[in-house]
Image (cartoon, rainbow, N blue to C red; front, side, top):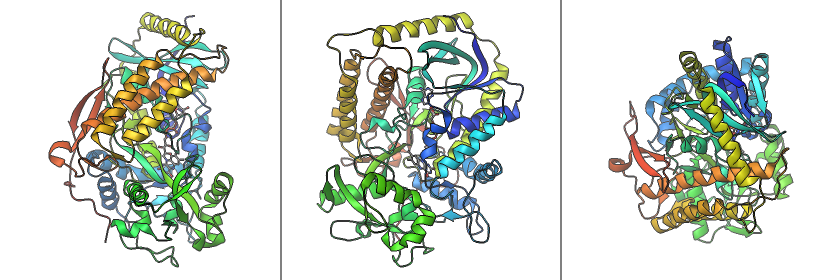
Amino acid sequence: MADDLQHDILIVGGGGAGLRAVIAAAEAHPDLDIAMVSKVYPMRSHTVSAEGGAAAVIKDNDSIEEHIHDTISGADWLADQDAVELFVNEAPREMIQLEHWGCPWSREEDGSVAVRPFGGMRIRRTWYAADKTGFHMLHALFQTSLKHTAVKRYDEWFATRLLVEDGRCQGVIAIEMRTGEVHAIRARSVIMCTGGGGRVFPFTTNAAIKTGDGMAMAYRAGVALKDMEFVQYHPTGLPGTGILITEAARGEGGILVNTEGRRYLEDYNLGEPVPIDDPRHPQLRTMELGPRDKLSQAFMKEQDAGRVFSGEYGTYTHLDVRHLGEQLIMERIPFVRELAKNYAGIDPVHEPIPVRPVVHYMMGGIHTNTDGETSLPGLFAAGECACVSINGANRLGSNSLTELLVFGKRAGLSAAEFAREHPDLDTDGLEAQRADEEASIAARFRTPRDGGERLATIRRELNATMEEGAGVYREESGIRATTEKVGELKERFENVGIDDHSKSFNTELTTAIELGFLLDVGEAVAHSALERTESRGSHQRTDYPDRDDDQFLKHSLAFRTDGAPRIEYADVTITNWPPAERTYGN
Ligand SMILES: Cc1cc2nc3c(=O)[nH]c(=O)nc-3n(C[C@H](O)[C@H](O)[C@H](O)COP(=O)(O)OP(=O)(O)OC[C@H]3O[C@@H](n4cnc5c(N)ncnc54)[C@H](O)[C@@H]3O)c2cc1C
């Protein structure tokens, strides 16, 4: 069935980045026809679950230079410094704007915006709304977007493929989940804001919807995925579920303890411990607030030394916040208490919380410039699915929420310009692509198959091989085995069969398509990791333990081919901060 769905700008994703892009485009260009597609109702996007906060310079003891420096060194010098400068400079204005749209930032006693310490930052600069920051940010953005009543929303529509015609992105193909119909939504420009893909790993803080869809769609359309080998493990997730215990718990004074009852980070050159009777100590070069990559690596070393606990859901250490007292816990990190009670069965006021490293964030993503442009004309990207790059080899906690605002807005504005300059769309060609996608979905997933592969088996095997070969520590034979396994799984995926052939809200069908996306993301991660024979940030090779700036002060670019991806490299932009050693000890 041919459609007549057409817009000037189409934003795929209703999280923080997508909504910020919508608002920017709608405010600056009220005459343009804007639409947004989201596979879940926008308020259910993963941004809602962010707890700790968003970084921006606001206090007198802080400076733009300090935030830039922390971000670049946190990134182990792999961030593009022009992008970081732009980001840090635009961040405070965006955060104040968000308050004007209704985001209730927590306050100091004198009424000024409160900031908390976060990992890898030498100065407190993380704004927060208790420990439900993402919820409040997304709410403020969503309600502001609703003021632009002309914006058309396709909620619970699932994008499966980019429409590319005449070398230009001209929209997406999407399944309307309520009816199961496959539509072409034509657009003069498209912005991917589809978030990360942590679900490629078994233990993750990421919601089940974070399956790297936008990354895979861009990759399939010939756009490079940049720096995919850099996967962030957050040091404090709950074993079993992977539910995040926010860094704010350590920012407020929580400490990490091993089976011997010791603050084991003392052994890892991460600075002096803050005395535990003084949780608000101003000195921030403290062990528990070291960057996430280093803390996750310390856990693995403790595990090797046999100093971690072992439980039903694997190994863990203790995060102890008892010394903060019930009042501070309830005031600053009430959600941590709620999560620990509900999902670990303990009350952190009286007992330590079991924690382990879990996959949290992908530094890599769709290769864009600072305006969100990709190499495919008409295609833009922002948020976690994009790689600008400000995060380099290791993102600093609380930079991501701010990144959604700064780069969501920039992508919205540049996509609007592009749409104005490129009014023509190839309607017939796009309809042919839609028909082709509909037929392919029907043939692969809507007809019964005997003896087909099971989705769950392939997903489990993918998760296991990613953790085994491309986890916190990596080495050649392990990564190579993972690349081979992912290749095998991709072949087996061609024979996958599903049981549900109904049309309405067929989540088995969308899960199958998501698994296809995950396989592409896993492939890009594993191959990029294999080629980078150095250790930098979150990418730690036991066979190449040193950082090698001569060869690898470079972004990797993974291009899809019919076989293994082709890996190329691009220069990192250095402006005023020459590569230096990354130190956190005093
Ligand atoms: C538990 C948790 C806590 C965090 N805490 C913090 C924090 O305190 N500070 C910080 O800076 N960062 C934090 N992060 C990271 C940060 O929250 C995310 O990186 C960020 O919110 C991602 O926003 P986004 O807009 O890029 O994508 P998301 O919010 O993930 O939204 C993606 C959107 O894309 C849509 N979508 C995806 N695929 C499709 C498809 N195929 N078709 C249609 N729509 C699609 C989804 O429906 C959704 O609307 C946290 C992350 C997690 C998981």
